[in-house]
Length: 271
Image (cartoon, rainbow, N blue to C red; front, side, top):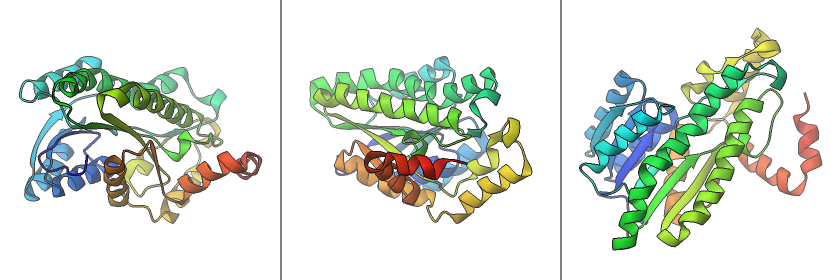
């Protein structure tokens, strides 16, 4: 897929951060957009920005943890279009806490969003993408938003890392499964990004402290990686049909050390 002009692109978690940046990047490329998230007001603001850039854009307020709502979104899209060209499974949340201190309900909530949100998107949109590909040989692409935490399990990040490890494994399998249908699949794995997500990080147990929150704030403050940079790199990854796109210094070093010097990485991560 070399051009996104007039391509139909669905972006989840499009109301802020990386999702918003992706929506604007595709709008600048002339794509037609379907934007979804839970925050209707913010979603409408992003839609207006896309329209100002000359793109067609519509919104659908949905909770991606609810399969019925994702199915309803897909039904609305497929009532007007044969299939989507690009599906961006971007929605996600972060939390911190030692494994034994995180309540089961928090484990379930995070995995419902970060993992099952991706699963619901795939189930709702991929069958139509396959059906069209078998008839017209049309190229299509899926992006699942991973993270540096999908390469390495850092202390205090077990819930988030487990979800992103799952996303990477899911993406690997999906890429292999869809290759014969001319549908590309990419896992995008950024490091720390300057987004509002840092303000929403839930901390539990011993990490629910001013000191731990200050450390998180410092990590995000040091980064120079912006959502717009992640979006630009994502579009490049789609064009190249990359299996994994690592973005930012944390992702680069983590993936490199994990492969070539795992013991050094392990020592570096110890609190």
